[in-house]
Image (cartoon, helix red, strand yellow):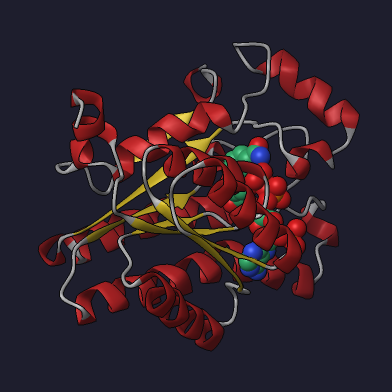
Length: 258
Ligand code: NDP
């Protein structure tokens, strides 16, 4: 084993990636496989999840699987985690990443829209972390969770109105710290990443005038790429981060600094 593999390798680890069919989750899954992790994709996009799993297995010498899983359904989450463990033999890592963003001025937000964003971005993160952690504890195993928060946990984005998104991401950041403290004695580390504006289907769907405004606000004058998050995610999962838990890693081209 090379020194780099000792520092950052995920050989023999089994990782679930939610929202892994595309975007940040897909890119992270590919990179985690490249450093040795077996990958299980959970997503609403069943066919795209299966396709991502196939692509990864074709490219890297790892095992992959995919499951339809709606992270807002606690019983389904429990079943799918058990099914993933049965299929792969064990579980070690969770990239808790599925999320949505709906942009509406606060005065026009309907209760259903508010609840949907809370349900996916906060409840979904909780249900996945809860059942994954419970599985590890029941099987007397340590492990690691990385939650995808956002720089919106720390700042308020403009010009787009997205109070529900911002509120959920702030909650994810604090939930991460709560889980880290509660599970520190169980050998389960829990960290979050907080990306700035990253070019994916999620941001591509947002109004062009908003995106142009962001470019003027970002000190680096560009959006980031999913690839630019992958190294931080691998670090947080690796043995190099054995003393790192309850930490939020901001990757935002300097956005939150100014
Ligand atoms: P994408 O929309 O490209 O991918 C998200 C994936 O999650 C989609 O496949 C989506 O499926 C899936 N998903 C949505 N709801 C659920 C659910 N209930 N259960 C399971 N899967 C679900 O988004 P990104 O890759 O851009 O974002 C990934 C994460 O990163 C999100 O949490 C997002 O908030 C966060 N983030 C993104 C930033 C960015 O600039 N892109 C910046 C900061 C944070 P479907 O298409 O069917 O909804």
